[in-house]
Length: 107
Picture 1 (tube, rainbow, N blue to C red):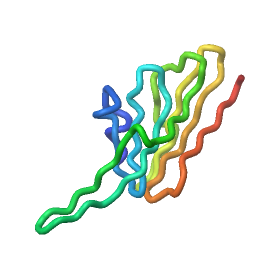
Picture 2 (cartoon, rainbow, N blue to C red; picture 1 turned 60 degrees about the horizontal axis):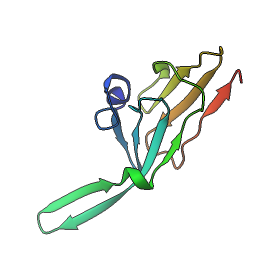
Picture 3 (cartoon, helix red, strand yellow; picture 1 turned 135 degrees about the vertical axis):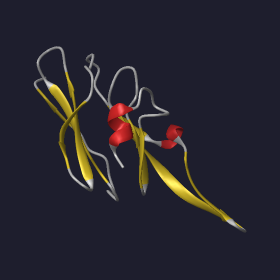
């Protein structure tokens, strides 16, 4: 479920539905965003919708390198972005998580 976060090229293709959030991380300057989702139902049609403009994006003011997978499992993936100054931004993404968090090391 998280492979698109790694292999996607932009914010539209680097997306993972991990309800209650939709995560994306294909931004040119790095980082990850979590957007809340909602279910819309009608006769014979059920959709999960999200609006990236309502999401929270975590990143850094420094230039981030290419994202890498630091760890992964069936329900989670840990993404990392190296920073030119020697640090790194680390963000764990888990299915069903009620929040998004990131740590910045090496400031």
